[in-house]
Length: 257
Image (tube, rainbow, N blue to C red; front, side, top):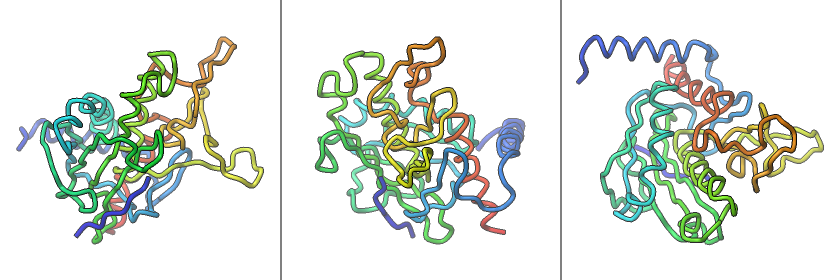
């Protein structure tokens, strides 16, 4: 039985190949259940300690949500399928399960709403968890329509603006799959602040709060990378978010032992 809590047949040869891929992807995970690491943190405050190896599906609350948001889930869904080993499929299915109710197992319902949290620019994930084993069940993603209906919501640069939309969608999907904000006291001043997260080549985890940890795009004047990455928008970071998801997948088996 799931509990809702807001957060923020295959050919044998193919099956063997997929299993081999999953083993390779999880080889670097820790051998004991682990809930935090460099640039990632499990959403244990919402009862999620692991990610199930069974497939998940993205569905939509209505036709508007489907037409507006479907394409934004394709990239992160494919990335989790390929790089974590958990199949996530973006469907055309409509599901009218109420917001206060958990959907069927491993179903992620996407909503397109104006200020779903009653505040400008705030989107929300409402993840559910399996009470029997603490794994990610599925839940509801509430995307603020203002990102699309208000011109230049994030930036006057159209490329950056679209990149920020993609990151926002992936960020909320990450919560549903069991990732929390990994903000930490990097400057050791005793306060964990917005955007304060570890980084590599100026790029922070997509789960850093706010999304990617950059309230506004900042371009470095040096010849190095820019502080805001517009070359791979909407992707979980390979250095932080993906290792966290792989550990959550490993936790599913480790917690059974």
